[in-house]
Length: 444
Image 1 (cartoon, one colour):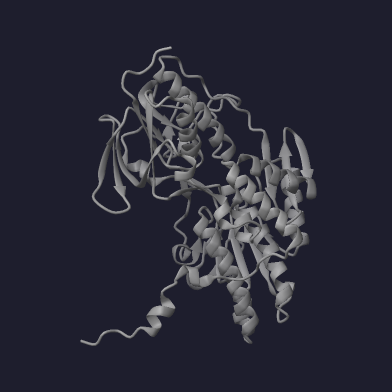
Image 2 (cartoon, one colour):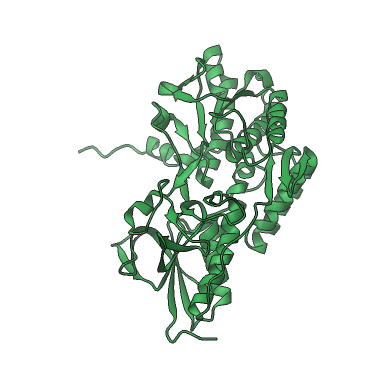
């Protein structure tokens, strides 16, 4: 075994699924004299995105769906800031800290894993009225907003105002959209027990999906079962339909329907982080970093020594599929790619050859609300309560740290004995309003 004379400087850009798991494994598998690991991310935590619907619905505390970086990565250096430029030709990254002038960080190995952002379209009104569902902030806001709309609906005597307030539109029928829609409707249905002025029929939940099916990650029969379950709950499912406009909160669909709605949630796919535009790394036509199966960045057939990538922002060949196919942008691949990449970096540092990443997608699980779900794992299809139980079991096993696993399990256990919290904390989003209202301006 060959050990490095000087510690290799490993820079991890982004602390999502790939960045956190890779940094954690590197810090455990490499000696201090072999490498020093620096992690750069604007947020002080990693968000376990599969738990966002549970956090929004109040099934778990929002704090328990995130993993604090400084607690988990004790042997790494954490830089709170955003990488604004990568010049791999100089092995240098420019970082803008939360406060202060930009920094230049030199490295020997770099893991480029800034993840993805919502893939939006130039739809009139979307920027002004839509909200995504990728961050814990968006999940908390959506929860408070939905509950606030119930308050508006209960307080008003105007039928048009009530209809608008209680109309909730979700665009995108993938896992994020289906889980967010199902969990939020389930929460609102629970909350109506405390609103004698309202009934379930007063609410309108609309799913808009541009294709002819939902949950494309599973077989068509499972997608059809999901649609059937949502229809039985009174949800309005619009397949083969596109959002054309939402100016002034009036939703206009490609099927000709038009109606006002105070809530529009956009979950129609993701795209690589725009941060990658300020790098000299090679990209494909979808703006993903081009990678070999070893997770090394490649420019054509040439390997860029010292550059690695994985996850949503990377085009990683899928060795289990036909030639020319790539791994899907899922947490399942991201976590396993992170482990393989960390082991490959260790191998390269020690003078060994990297191993290609190869993993056959085992399937998918989704929650459709409390005690309801759909799952397809290793060809086995489950529905209802068994699928919901598998969903929870799988994700609690995947969230990093024993601390978070215990806290999530405690949240779930308490939910069996205590009623769900359905109070809106809308003041969180603008906490200074009340103070500024009572503080008079200084007259000149």
